[in-house]
Image 1 (tube, protein in one colour):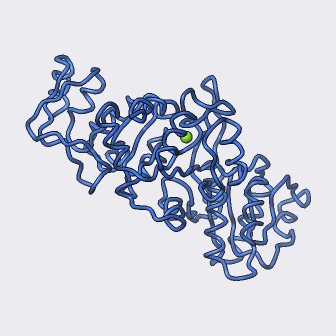
Image 2 (cartoon, protein in one colour; image 1 turned 180 degrees about the vertical axis):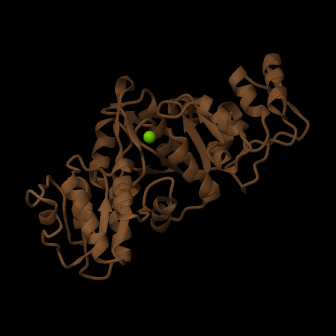
Image 3 (cartoon, helix red, strand yellow; image 1 turned 45 degrees about the vertical axis):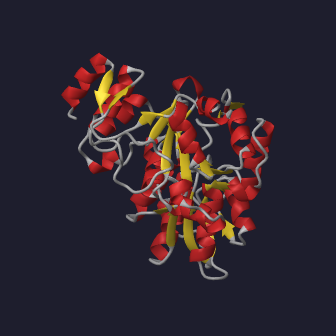
Length: 361
Ligand SMILES: [Mg+2]
């Protein structure tokens, strides 16, 4: 159905669903089937327009559909900020929803691009905010995954130059990767000639960029020198999130800005560990027996959470408690561009708490 027809359908409050029910990218998690040519009465104009377009389609997850989708899943991967909590406050109903999911035997894992907390710190935060108990092995932050990547990619004894937080440093320690760099750094003299002659650590074979509140020209300069010294030196970024939203509509620059600075100086592209790259999902799949067709990715960002889930063949669920909006979903869904279509989730809910009724049976 074309967009203009969708608009008319929205006005009537119902829409034909011919040819747009089953998605093309393989089996999903108990997606409810609607016979081609059937009609579906939908709740709101927004839902109707979303359901009316061709290609990928996103629908509200509720009622029998929610029960079927949850019944067909044995693992749920949760993004954290904007899905489970905002800052230090749990989102209303989120701990109860996850408690019910855990009680019904679902495996819950946490997949976050935030590199400024360790796995252990995440389990403590989950406990503090009333979520069901989690073990560190259920948490896949980009700091842990970056350390895992370097452990696989670096030869024994090789070190990393790190632009990052104490948490990133702790995960590298846990993985046995020697490293230097975290904390403030000053330029080693008054002139550019001094900057280009500061000593370099011979063992460094990788530059790792995460969130670094002490990011500086001095660190950028040193990172470039390691990358120029050795064309085989790895360049790895934890994620490309460009902004970190704060309460009240403000934001601060995200790690993506720092990665871009190093890439620009080095004229090289970094390997990115975090979402939407599938490496972070591969980390989960390497630790647990994961069937993508029985796994749901729950997130609040289309360009990271949902894109990764779609890329990995997971069922994707957008919560409207964080960054992305239904308007954005509709824009992508109405586009003919395959890249934009890959940002469309299977389902959305206003909040993860909306799953509670489906978990009561
Ligand atoms: Mg988020």
